[in-house]
Image: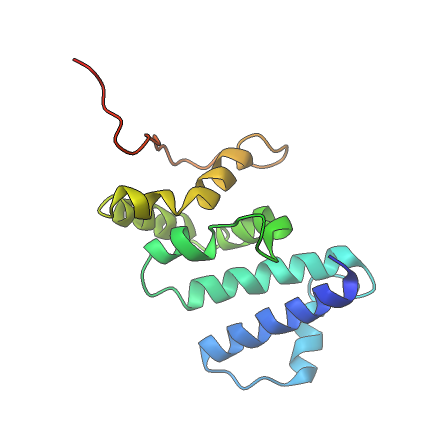
Length: 154
């Protein structure tokens, strides 16, 4: 993603977070909020800001935990934030109850139909990728994905 588009995405995520929190947005606050991630001349600063603000939006607007699995963190290659997926999940896991919310979402997902469960493939791929990336711990979540309609012979 080009820097100009990244800056627009950060602005949108920051604005959505403030709206979800009931805060009136002011551009002077935006500049200060982005500066906490580093020098605004560098792309890495904007990537960190995007991850942080996107995670805040997911956390603050979470009404049902299963939506984290089916929507917020269900990253697929056609999503604009796909390349930032690992950073966004890392930022969300910084919340003290972030992992617990994801676990609750997975538990809720078990009550859904197999077709609905399969819609979360982007999330499951992200979790699998995370364990193989250097510097990132595997999530302490264990799940087995079975094919729809498959059963074991006795």
